[in-house]
Length: 157
Picture 1 (cartoon, rainbow, N blue to C red):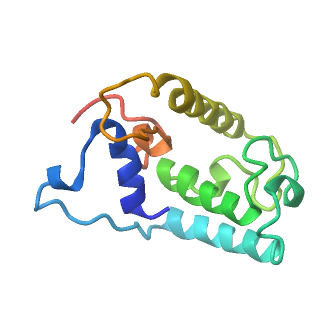
Picture 2: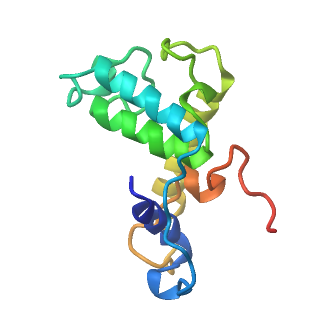
Picture 3: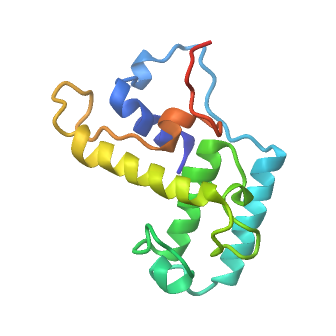
């Protein structure tokens, strides 16, 4: 997902449209730090391993997919890369064992599943009845709270 789209999703709740952004606000650009490069390397490796199967449901391509199994396998990789990895500022190995992606060794993997279920509940049940939100499709996602950090933003600077 492009940064501008992620900003639009995050701002759907707060109503922070481009007209409200300061002229001095720099354009969003992806960080190319070591975590990002490692994550991209793992994603490229997995993409190569599923070549020709990218459009099949993820549950048919990968083992132990417990959420988002209906997504095309290639799309699941994009969600993992940007939606989870970039949103939390981590590489794939934060939740997974490299090369053995189906293993359940790390508790962060289940935390991510539980947080995804929480966001779905917020989006599907709790946001819909709020009548004065800006925009018809307000959503929360990992970026809403995490903003590129493992721990959600709990305090303002």
